Image 1: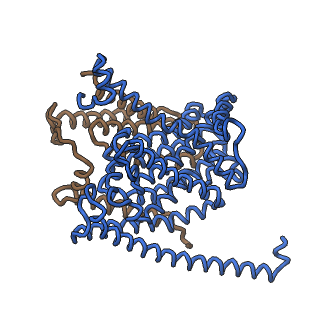
Image 2: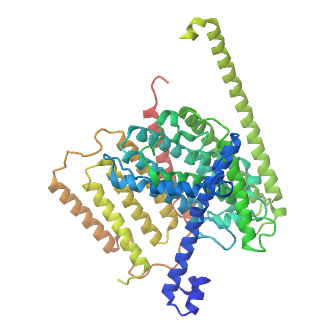
Image 3: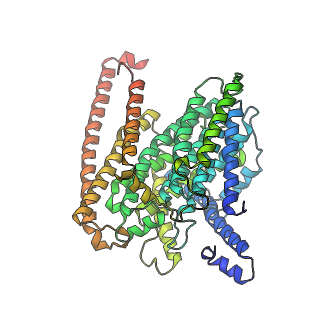
Length: 408
Length: 170
């Protein structure tokens, strides 16, 4: 227990507090800090999201409450809290109330393993990456429960579609996640960041990053994968019966999940808190992580507000016929090439202490392999696009020949 | 039993596991039954954490709750009359004999050194890491044969499932 008692805990014991109590209090403060950061961030995120969406759509966005509309979310929150809390009479009351909590908790729990700086993280789990995947499955569960417990056919249909989407895109997500794990030789997120001291993993395997980016966009249910909402088809999806703060919890979870994924991608592929002068102060390291995560987050908002929604069959076909085979092939190629290079002595066996120079041959070869795969893929996609265009042109020609049929 | 963090955790996870299991067999609502099943499986994941096997805990949550239980909920939701099931299983004597026999076997298995049990208090200090687990799975002196057999079995099951689900005309 003594080696656990450092920092705030030792301060408390020096001040005369009981050892066990001091440890408990310091752990409690740590837990509150780690879970508090995302809770506070989400208030700001909602404002950023609305502002960015407004600018992309040539609007101004919230600008009345507080300076440049910064307090708009607080006002919205008060509104949501003071709204009548309706539970449908035929709903499964316990499950109906539990679903938004589980949904939000599944996102906040991810923050427990995120390394903010070299010294500040909730916990350095040996299985960090796997923990992230396991926790994400609670989010799926929450949506399923919400859809069923509402006792509404639209909610149920929405839940079915969303769960099909989430379960499908978890497969390429995990395969892409395995690439940084493989490169770092560890599932701990702290080790994954440290392993990128020589070279960021985005350079070693850009394809894995692209797959992770696409599937995490799908996991958060953002356009072009926003089947969750699909207002025109499902009214609102699984959360149709929810009102007030319970509805707010689902939305806060979604907003936070997007940002969490940005931070995760910064950690897995962009060296986390690595950056010039990060060793000077934990604050600089934290700022680097925030900046990288923030940029990735902004690109997801950009994407969300630019592309239209896909149909469910298109989404499923894209996943199972394109993304899953690609992610498996990418994993096999990376692991095979990496092992081959280690056997030949070209790649360092211990990536944690490898410098930029040690990693240069590995980087070049892996990048070439990735480039070759991307070129091959572009060829396939071009051919498919040409076929699709030819088909649609033929269909249009048929319509032109029979104008009376087109009218009906 | 000494009351420390581990024993409190053990009690909590036991309540989860057994309470969830009781919920599964007593509820009249199939969907709630699957939720209770997840609670029970989550309790088992907690045991793995207490036994210093975080990898197994995460896999337990990922595979059993994230995949199998979600599949069960899908199957349950596609069946008719999910809630308020009227049919009762009334053959109490065979169930009693069966469960007692199973309990006895488990009790014997745990108390007698049939499965090469450790004497009390001799849990090794060495905590196996995920790396050790992975190495043991592909080590020829370890579990490579069971591992390969399981892989072949799973592949066969997958091919079988695809074959059954395949449209004849396609």
